[in-house]
Length: 296
Image 1 (cartoon, rainbow, N blue to C red):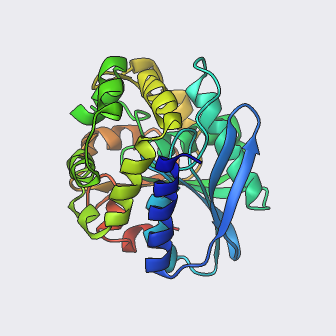
Image 2 (image 1 turned 90 degrees about the vertical axis):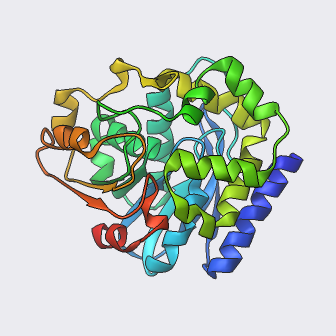
């Protein structure tokens, strides 16, 4: 394990200790993706699979776990993110990668179906899985703009820069400090509550210093974005939106990537969808977990 990975693991351990939650560590060898790492809790009811956003990791769901006692939960770091391996090659289809990861996470619950809870790119992964592998999905809970699945959004400057090879290389190799990285992340996510979770800022910084992150994450973003502009072919089509199962959508009032009016246009096409605005930005459960817990 590299020194950056060791520091990221230590950041996650500090957060788990602070929260006082009990987790089962997960390490799954997913064909074509390498080793995906994450955690699980065991309980009753329909399992929850938690899918994180681009550049973040499964640990960003940890502050939610004290509110989910007694539930079965599985969360995995996406390839190159957190502590998971980077993808072995440069030529990959992002949709296939994320559906394969989500499928592995559902199977790790020990159940045939799960509720998929997705934030940002994790929401896009949840929607793709519901379309491509519907037998695995009970329903969707999308928190924050689901990647570029809903048309009408725009990435911030930091995410856009990571989608450009030359600027991504410069950003991810230049000397900086965890506090500066966390400050940029707070602005990017429009989530001031991140100040209350310094372990997450440290973890995001140290994970971004890993070679697997540098190799994989910018290539993922390049498939989604032309700098800050979403690639039109990545948005869900009307037939795809119509194929989604029951969907609950929570949109932070300070959401940075997508106007709520644009989200409502997409939600109107989903046969069983409910959307509402909540306090917070792109990761609103850090501000107030209550609405998300109620939706689960």
